[in-house]
Length: 373
Image (cartoon, rainbow, N blue to C red):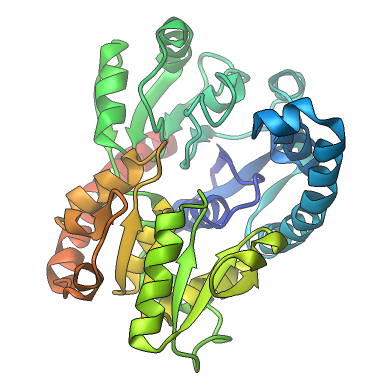
């Protein structure tokens, strides 16, 4: 059996990252490959890195050492909880490389052995979130004659002028490239990269049956509105509170941070990945500003509204447009009737199945090329 080594963002402790990693693995295994995720852990994906970046969150933290120390003490508890939650899922469901790598140089010094190398999904080519261009995510560590391809990689924004030449050079070794957003195709075409294919996020490529099997039933007997407010949008919280009160429903707030107990509703502090899926599946309404919460709301046929975050809203806008439900996105001032409006999920499912068939064509083409290698 031939082997694919996949490099992706899987250790930054969030639900979307681990679930897209798992979905990618399932897809490659279904195609007849052994799939291993390279356990590449940058410092910024660790609690140490997160604590170091706290001073960038606000001028107050940067200029007040006492306040910064207090913030680190508060956040450390949440970071420890996050690591435990997401490491448990990865250890139980994802085939990780035995060796852990912390830099592109470490990968160059001990290249994982495989028949093909994949740059996976998530915002792996987003230099804003990655704090610069990360060469490892462009498979810089493998020889130029290695079989390189990407699957649903995301750029998430326009490529900075200063980064264009280095990115274009590193992408020359790729035999096949697929991305998640239409804007990413435009961005890569501007670099001279052609034949770029747009595909669904791996979590949407998989059918809902996979996620139903994985989801926990812990919250199935409760009636509630659930929020997942990554960007601490006060308008999102206000709308959720109004909706829950009007519908006489419990308001549950998924958050990584224990101090978010001060926000409206009842805090569900860093639930397991399985519980996260169950919380979305069993909710009466879902209100979020997250791409993957949007994706799973669609998979589970929920009534939902997605608030566009100030940065990196492209992913949400793109998938809502592709599925012909752009009205489920908001700049921040929805009405109750907006979330109450019915969604034609027969139409949505038909579109999803059409896109899945297109994605399958890309994946089979890549798979056959690897097997012929």
